[in-house]
Length: 337
Image 1 (cartoon, rainbow, N blue to C red):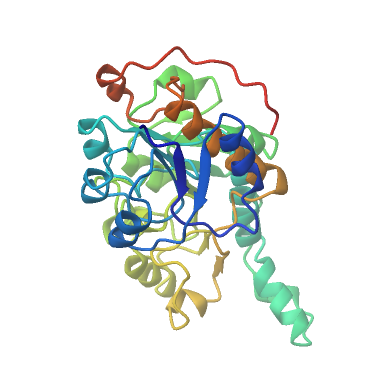
Image 2: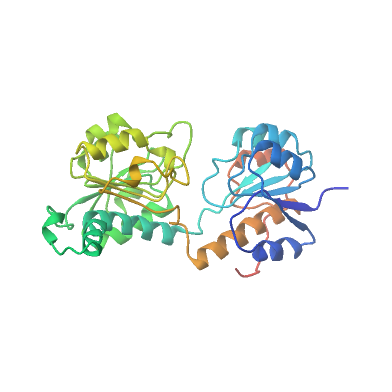
């Protein structure tokens, strides 16, 4: 008999009620677990037809050890916890939720670079310590007319570009997978990575984490930037070489950084980024609002349930897997979030 169980490999949520609703509404069973390692997933999710995954590693070994597995649905946009090549070879669909938090993340990126630009944390810390001197924030340049450099031009950076336009920011874009006319339609200029780094006053990172983008920004890249440049990352921590970033910040190669993601999370207590006055770090919260979290949980579970029931989904990341499967056409599911 085919498995009717969808396992949550690991989660940080207070409740799994949205997932329970989606899974049970089509006659499947939701089984929560808290797995951290490959061995945990293999042991705890042995009869899974589907996995809802937050951080647990879904490697080739894991998938080969779960004979009933049809789908891995990732809580989020990125799928770097899943071996996509192995999943495709094994006929396993990998899903993400590409559209659930574009507004929240673009707002958070904007908030980080505005806070860095206006040196709000430096000023607020002084006030709390009893001071009252705006001069400690000098120099601050007028924002209008500066250049916002976007590394990546998917949903989130395009939304950020629209918001930045209201502040009269120029737009420079690096993305080898988009067309010049798509960038131009948003008022931007498509450039090489090096040219974006050289010309931008604010650089916001929005690329997926792959073996090719790991440490996309390192010593060489920071050396190309303006000394007054601000770097913002709301995508994935390992996109930035933190040793190189700390060096750039401490030696005046760039002015400031705003980070919602770090190479290790939580950021270690003794990490130098915690102590630098020209850094703002937030605890991987850019995705969050009450509405976006509900949408994420609902869509993650709904996608997995639909695949287990034999229906196609438009957000299959490894699209070529469809050739190995006999999925029924996608059906509109009108259950609200």
